[in-house]
Every structure is written in C-alpha cells, then in structure tokens.
Length: 468
Image (cartoon, rainbow, N blue to C red; front, side, top):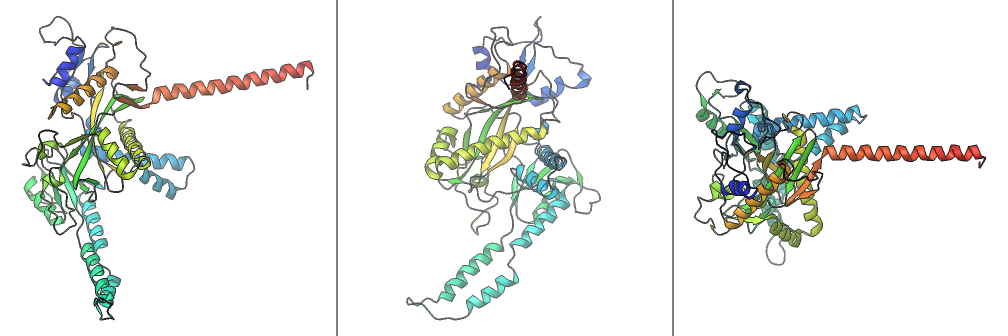
C-alpha cells in the first residue's frame, strides 16, 4: 500500500494479509496504490504484466471520470450518443435532442478554459442580458410610481407595488455567478467564484505565461493550471442556514460489463458559516467558509466543530429530509442520486480501459438544491482516508472493508468459494450488474421460447389424435 492509513492497513490485517516488500521471494496480490503508482504500473515503458493473482485499486485511465474537464467532455459525448441512438430508433430529432439533454441534466453548465473561453463568455453575456430589466419592467416601474389613492392605513397601493417592482428590478440586475476550479487539484485548492468576465481575465493574466494573447485574451497555458468554469448552484438546500454537499462512495469492479455498488455509509459535509446567496447584496463571493464544503477548507474556520467534524450520516440526513420534505420526496431524491451515479459511469464506460486486474473506490461529491434536485460536482479517484472523528474512522473502515469484499472476495484468495452474484455486501448495495442482467434476459427469452415450443408440440399432438 502507498497509504499508511489505519483504515487501509487495519482491513488488510483483518483479512490476515501480510505487508509485501521488494526483497520478498514471492509476489504481491493486492496493491492499494496512489494514482501516480498506478500510472507507473500500467506504463508501457515499464513492461509490467500483472498476473491473475494480482489486483490494483485504480483503473489505468480513471481520470476519464475523475478529472473535471474530462468528466464534462465524456458526459457531453454521452449526451450526443443518446441522441444519435434515439434518432436511429426512429425518434423525432427535436424530441431526441430534448430527451438526451434532460437525461444528462445533472451537471451545471460547464466549460473548460482556455479552450472554451469564447463559448463561456457568450453564455455568460446571454445570461447577464436575461437578468437585466426589460423595457416593460421600466414602464411598469414608472406606472407603479405614479401617485394613487391610499389605503386606510395611509400607505398607497402604488407605493407597495413600486417597492415590490423595484426589488424585482434590483434582483434582475444581479450578475450570474460561476465557480472556477483547477482541473487537477483537490481539497478546495484554487477554487474561486466570479460574477464578471473581467475577473476571469485577471485570473488569465496571473495563470498564463506571456506571449501573444489569442482572440479572447488568454495567453499560453503554463504548467497544469487548466480550469473548468461552471454555473454556480446559487440555491442549495440549506439546513440550519448552512450549505452542505454529499460524499457518496461507489465501488466499480468492471466497466465492461459494468458492475458497481453504492455504499449506504456516505455523509453530508456542512459549511461552518451561514450561507448567503451570491445574488444577495450581503453575499460575499470570497467567503469560502460559506460556499466551499471541503473539509480541508472548513477546518481552518474558528467555528469548525472538532467533535462531529461538520458531518451528518446519510441515515440522519434521510430522517431529517423525510420529516421536512416527506418520505415520498426523499425517496425520489435518493433514487435520483443513484441515477446520476449510473449515468456518469455509462458516460465513461466505453472509454475506460477495462483491465480485469482493477477495481476502484470513487468518492462522489453531490449537491442538492432547494428543489431537491441533485447536481454532480465532481468524482474523486482517491477519496480522503483520513479520519476527522471516531465516527468518520468507523465509516471509512467499513467502506474499505466492503470494497475489498466485492473487489477481492475470499474466493480470489483461495479461502473459500463465494457467489459473486449478490445484491448487497455489507454497506454496499448493487447499483448495476450488466452481466447478470444480460444472463437473466437470456434466461427469460429461453423460457419463453421453451414454453412456445411446448405449446406447439401439445397442439400438434392434439391434432394428431383428432382432438380438434
């Protein structure tokens, strides 16, 4: 293991495994590697060939799902694939396009920089124009401002209407908020919010080397400071006035055929500061304690609670939502969370190198808005294994234990034979198993064919005997 983390080593020891060293005269079986070691293992220059007895905890090109820019690219391609398939099946092109867009409506509008800067700038300007008051708004405001008869309490109805309209006009003059993130960093590093293109240009000047600027004012990319810019979800669901997101654990043992599990042991991560919308006059785009849920960011806040780490279990979150929003709405939300995970896996299914020696534990970060709509923020290839509290340690111990149970079952180690066609293992629930589904479909087709053949034989036998 590249991680000397208790939640990993304790699970290895619990299975009776021994730590492997390069001077051993036997080979290793399971390697819990970091992404850099995984790159070395699968590099063609190294000439390493894994045996049937070896497993690694990353797929060779896991970054197709976990790099922010590549995730967006793959989801966009998946949308086009869905549209093409529907059109080939005879669906009206306009309907196919609309349905495909709806199917992948779990990512906020996102562009990669610098390559898609022009597209982003165009989208930003159009949204800004849509928020500006129209000529009708101005005329209505003037009309509402004209003196009219007062009500019994001495306040004119026109004054109230004027105040309401002015408030709406002021709200419509607010600029759209977008969030910028470096594609290859984690733990909230390099993230900031913007509400003007000028802020993007200032970032470009600082992040890009000199030389002649291109048509949109961006220079030559320096290092790995590529960014994505996404429409900021400005109306997140709040609990106690605070923003939160979800960390969900997903274990994938194969991409083709796709087989994946979702853990029930995820959690909600809360900001330490109260949330104020960026559209409010009191909103502060630079207040990361109110906008970014990353634990690495929140731990620096004096209000951070060391006892519970600003986290709720999924069980407690579900109980709260059932009481606040109802059981039906909560159940629908959790089904939609599973649907988002499945669609994101489908989006990369055919570009992922499906090495039989690999499995992966992904950390999905999801945001829920006020309408209980889930949004996929990002996917982590190496979700944090550090424990901030005892409960956090217990959760991660169980997640690693169950991930190993499905990816490296006891039958793999020759300890015992087990049936891998299961719907749940510990805290993990089966999300998808294409191989099992295909086998079941084939079996049902065979049964229907056999029943049809049996009926035909019976009909012929009766006819031979003259029963008809």
